[in-house]
Length: 630
Image 1 (cartoon, helix red, strand yellow):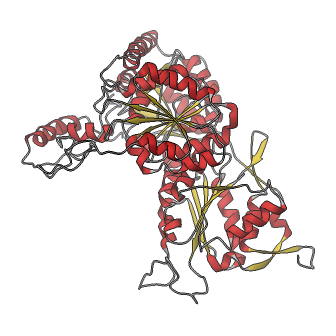
Image 2 (cartoon, one colour):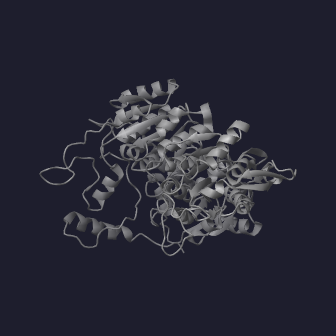
Image 3 (spheres, helix red, strand yellow):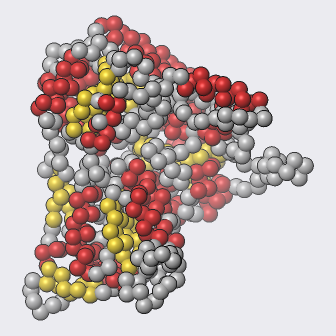
């Protein structure tokens, strides 16, 4: 301790962790720890710096910054992002990794967080600022400059990036990172690269740096003139449609959306991030929209003269690659906290918090209601899709069940506040089309980056956020499972209880179907041994056992043969107090829900294969509906 009462002598790493332990977020009068814990894997780049700081803090103040030993650096960032998503972006975790490959492993996780607009704080270790040991172990050298490392790869996938070469630089950098983490419009990955010698360097820090600091998360109100313009467009609409995105969920605007839809009669479709923002059985709910959307939402979108996008970034799946909104004179009203998204499709912009905007818009269009014919069409299409969903959920397909039957069983067995998690393969498409979410927290599908391997670490992050308040169920395909199963060990180590549903279909169902539809004959999309006769991967199934692998991580494994056995296995998993993996084999080729949207995946313009030439002709025909919304 320095003799001057106004400063305290700590290393850069010690100061970083002490600062982070004192940061809070606040919205609507509720304060919470902004960063309540740290994931990390230690190596020579951080074990004596950040590792020592975490050890010291755990002894002096055990609750200040709990440390979690994860197994994969990418998995740590996924867990932090899932934690942040569950907390509606009001809390997140910090992740640290050693120099070189350890830190570089976090780049994919950073991209996922930024693509999904989710806050995560990353502290990758770096080479020596002094450059005496140069190059250090695991340093990537650039012959044109000595001022670069693998951590520069974080720049394009981070909302904030800095490197601390001197202790004094830490103070403004940490404050800037906190600003980004708590900014609803700008949030994403905040990366502060930490040279390993600087981590251990001591400095006299002002004690004010470690005082409790509250970051107020704003609810920007709509500008009156913008609100009036939006209200005028909506009042003139005869067949309007709302597209609810993740911004509705993050701003906790679900109740406001449901009231607005009931007040006006405007049908509401949802994106992957927005599913559950309106309960599936609300009279105005019409399900998912776009490439993997429901027939109800997509037919209404084709006829809508005004589209009201609330908290959506309009990904290509939402717009079905600019084909789903078919009215020749369609107009857009976009409500978004980020002007970048609000301006899309030449929209009438309302840059505001979703909840604040919906409450104000309800008053601004008071008395407006859609025509009775549009209400009747909404109800008729929603009922028809409900019947199609029931059929997909109860196919009785054999000899192996379709994965939609597994989803149906889960949808019927899980409670409204339990959480289903998924991210990649054919499953997000089936889930968006079919899943009946009654609450905004039930549906947790990462589809901005659609990152294989997300689900298991995400289950850990969600469970850490919710505790015993709900069952957390991650649905994992065999392809995704092989990408990142390691965090099962962390889940077991921490005594967390999650349920993993492992679907084994011996291949890539989504890309296989896409390959076939684009004339590539499912090439390279099945798990098969290489055949001695053909030289291709078209032999017998490989002799690996994913159920045994899951058990090797310490999880309880139940193998289910068919849907009835799966239902029984799920009930056993709920009653158990330990992590359970339910293993079930499903049909690689579906059947999947009826497709009603398009996705632009280019086809080879010339080919010796008839299947590719046929697919190219179909592609050109479908592309005719594509347009810019001007």
